[in-house]
Length: 491
Image (cartoon, rainbow, N blue to C red; front, side):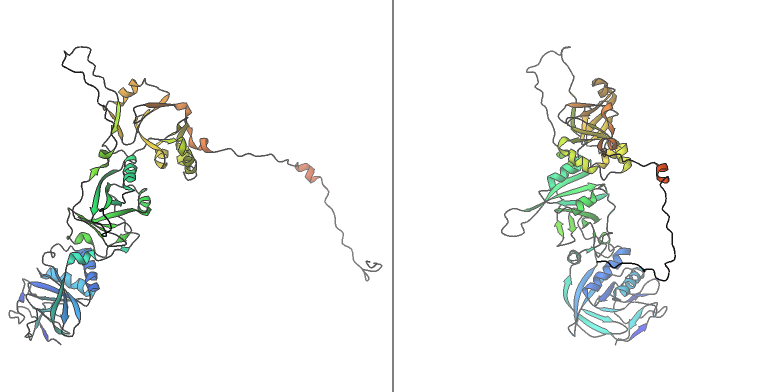
């Protein structure tokens, strides 16, 4: 057992080498040290400490070592720059919760840090003569240790598997989506059609085995403001993973939580990305790929008008008129003003009406044409997850989602160029054509889909005839002494 003495007020001489007094008179060395009985106790310490404090002030001086005593037992030591007694007080408090012992010193000799029994710290009465790299003096033991190996903090954090936590949901402002190669193009179309502000890139990893001759590829999306209605669909689709950012350069799969608060441990490269999965090792991306806006990947219709050969005098015969075209736009538009359901998808529309609310059915107008069904109404158009979406360019003109009118003329001017059809709703098409649907053709959706049930009348009896029927009367008389007298046996 080590023999320690309490440091007194204004004491100047201390026996432990490298131990001195700070401005408040607390015995403090240049470094702090926490001894843990096992590695899982160290993880518990990091989990508790990172929840309230950031490890950034300690990260440069932090050192984790597995040490071995003379008895052959192995323990874990966490060393760091002491800095001040305020920092050491926080470390010591968390260490007590995690099952560790806190020491302070400078080189190889470390003495127990202060507690309630010794507000100004401890000093050792005897110093052990040893060549071991570490000697610890505690009120209950004194031990020397050899360094077995050094543990890298980054490898330790990467080796920790997240645990399931259904409540672990990010704020949704930024979400990383990792998709298999076969699902990537479909997600590009789905996000574009839904007017989702997102970027996409392709990441590659080396082949998993020597039998593979192609690298491992995945589509990586950075989605800004993912709607809540899409999160269950993306999170439950095989081949698609949702990852919520947990700090610069790191993200954790939706529905899981890392044991350590990663935002408080700045060990990840912001230029790369580490994706912690619920099952399997984390995916490390050393350098983020080029992320392209989804609007830049849409199909563009380019028309090269033939120019006249040679130079001529510009005269009044030269025309400046250009046709109106629809090209991919960059401005995000989330409001859906109308939906077009082709004839091939009308069956889906019929099934979808069974799950729509009363207000949606009543507030949605539908017109059935030879090409399909056109639906208008803000709530109804957004509630139907089928068909082709349109946004309202003019009270009577609708443009496909993801496209914009060029040249960017005033909506009233385009409406007048179309002849100002007051009784028509005009739907512009991506191929340059326009379809008009009469306003009188639109009826409420609930009236259009509900089929009247057949019924048959039943004859009803009049109440007076029922009351005229005489009610039978039952008389009860005494049976007498021989109630069965004179009865004949049944043969």
